Length: 111
Length: 121
Image (cartoon, rainbow over all chains, first blue to last red; front, side):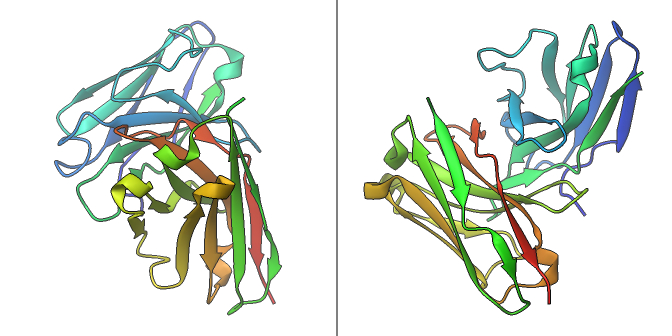
């Protein structure tokens, strides 16, 4: 069982917006602004899409945005494109000895 | 180009050992913490452990599932991190990724392509 809870799947049509949630506790998501999001296409390594809740690395489309409220972080993808179809993972710093926790992942399907 | 390249994966019997390597290039390796993350086939990402930089005393931490069996080390002179895996179990079968976390950051911005470890008799 993953430390952070994500929906198993979400879907949307091209051009639409979708939001993926990531729920943790006050020891991780709620306690720190250190949530990051990763995109993973089949057979590929994860790619950083959002860091520190809402910051985008250079080169990541501004269609990707992040936010947080309480113990839940969210990733929003606007103007869905076929290439966005992938698995998405949230991660957070945690005050536990493990230092890092991941969500279980969400499969995004672009209809 | 900033790059991480894992090697050393393969087939090993339950109870056996394997040592993975992660060769870094294109950045100041000695200043970064190095993490290992694994992914079983069809499953999600699982954090395995990390080693911090010399400035942070090369401190290590491990997931409960591997603690006592896996050891992370690094050789800054070779820009390489290692994952020594002992007492391997079938449930350790996965793709193993190494990834970088720079000092004073809390995200992994560079990932290797992964190396596959299969534990089977």
